[in-house]
Image (cartoon, rainbow, N blue to C red; front, side, top):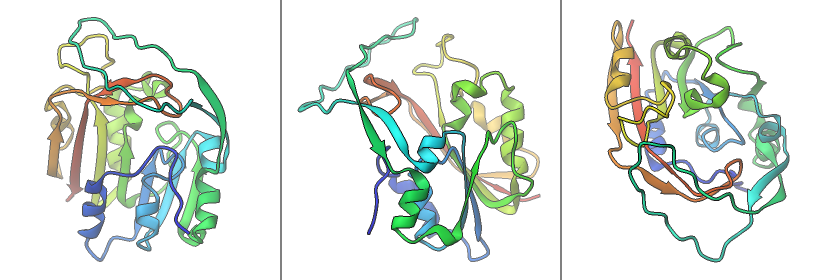
Length: 235
């Protein structure tokens, strides 16, 4: 049986990336794996996956708060502002989630899975990987006390030569916003971290914020602006 992440389905671009991986790729690391949204596409293809997160509930199951289901979601219109926008928090209800490990057991995928409950940027594993993937883990509040250059170097240092670093990263809703921390990349800023032996294969950044409805761990409707980068380590 196939299971589903509490945080929805992975984007189609991840499947396109996996389907084009060369044959020498075997070991994958997902930083900020949660309950497996980005883990399962690799496991189902037979890759060995190291899944890292600090959220014990997401890893092993337990109770989470989610917004009470609404019959209709009214999409907010983004309004430009020099101050941080505030949106009303919705009422929530407690729900039981399986977590990554139980989901893997249900799908009989535990043999290729290594779960590590840790903070990757403060206590990374003592090995490198053919593929390292992370989705917006740089912008977690717990990481904002860590210099951005250190975070990026920690990610890059755990990629094997010939391997890939694939990142989703968050951007301020507008480049001029100074109320977003420096860990939110401004336009084209991320490219400066991929010189000296790295080759950027793909980089796309949104120009306009997109609406996202309230979800587990964030009980208010909100806006995001994302960038995506895929880079190969050649030296």
